[in-house]
Length: 298
Ligand code: SF4
Image (cartoon, rainbow, N blue to C red; front, top):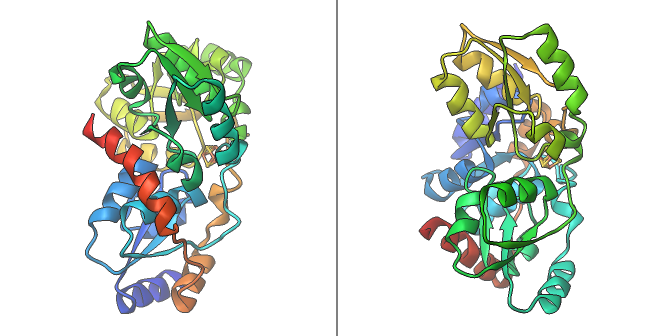
């Protein structure tokens, strides 16, 4: 059986499998840890195993490589990119910095290593508002997600936010009318959404949180029913960890095709061949590490 073969080979290679919350349920099932991108990067930097099989999208494997340079990062499908991260290049960001010379750059973790290397701070969807609030400078270049930027600008006053016009196509497919219709059918449900959703969706939500924040909120909250506005994969953990509660996906279109590119077959193949690997070049890694460390020190 595929799962057995993966487990055997994982032991032989002294490997650990990390999976993002949006991965296929069978991939989450076989993983040693599941979590959001920062949780996984933090785990990656502390594991004792030599090899990490990273099940997520490319920028996440890069972040693991930045934080754990001595580990071999296996990435089962090099085509699993993030269209949001790919909306901005390092040159785009250099041009923006040139235009707004006094601005501080805050980049969402959904960026390439080269963009991180051009940034002052990195943030996640869980701490974006906190990071921006703590920066003493007034003018902030925020890249690449316009919806997370909108959410931050609503929460943090007294900042001038220059927001890149990128978005996640998966979260963009969740429409406010989907949620309004579901709410009419399920009046007792709370609306819980990810800040990558379009602003019209954010404006009608009861709770806006990162994937780890959604998991925490739904566990601690006393309500029994939730309309969930994020990628479909999160419902696997929500249902598993909260058997007495009901979770309704806000839109059947909220499926990230890149996250679903990682399969059990590809995980086995990558462990057999010990490739493909993701390794951020040292010159970029050194520069990209600084804004991540700045974030962690806040
Ligand atoms: Fe990128 Fe959106 Fe897919 Fe996440 S869900 S990997 S942000 S495209």
